[in-house]
Amino acid sequence: MKIVIVMAIREFEEAVKKLFKSAKIRRFSYLNSTDYQYISEEHFEGNWFGQELHEVEAVVFYAFSSQEEINDLAKNIAEFNAQHESTDPIRWMSFKIDNCN
Image 1 (cartoon, rainbow, N blue to C red):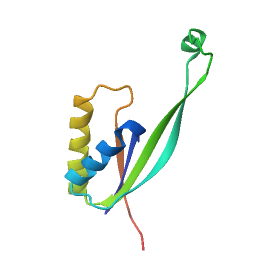
Image 2: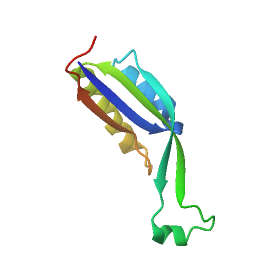
Image 3: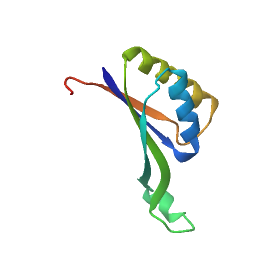
């Protein structure tokens, strides 16, 4: 068994839910998140609004799943990212679970 974690901007929330469904991952959880990114000094100087810290509303999904389902999800995410040009593509990672109850 593995855990998969998927991070996306809030605008992609419904798309990620569909990607889970098409990978046959029927049970998952998600949390609302605010992602932060510091703007480099060279970009900060040209920033008319003068904000050094950029905030993005996001969602973090996680699910316990099989390697086969995670492979399908990874393929779905890669296809989605290829079709949608975005500075914030959907990102994912998975980890093996050694022990659980």
